[in-house]
Image 1 (tube, one colour):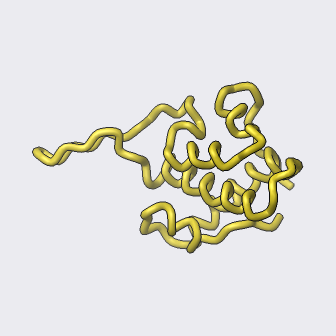
Image 2: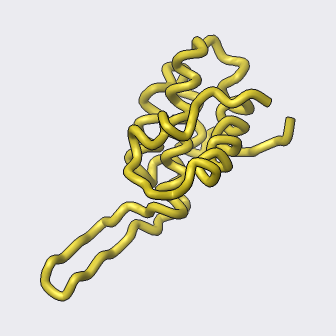
Image 3: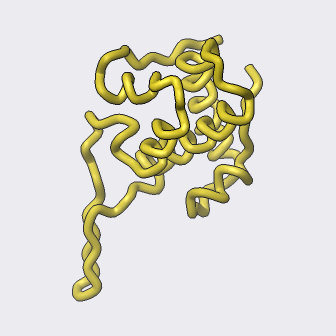
Length: 121
């Protein structure tokens, strides 16, 4: 399976200090997801690469770099989003991936109209 994006490109959109090797692991998962759900659509290679990059950032932000939903300066408090049932809609990165998909496939996945699955190639 060939991935479409790189760790350097992912790090252009998500501020993270995790190693490229770890980002590459997320890229493999994002690539499987994009290939399984969008690979047979009429989206061009550049669009699929862009979506893969944003899905990778989404996966990273769901696990290693969770997005804060609330932050306070006094007594240094942070509350993270944890609404896992929302899937791609749970992060700004996933929302952008949905918006980039002109076939509406990711929107239908996020709405529960299609099953989400990853299959090894």
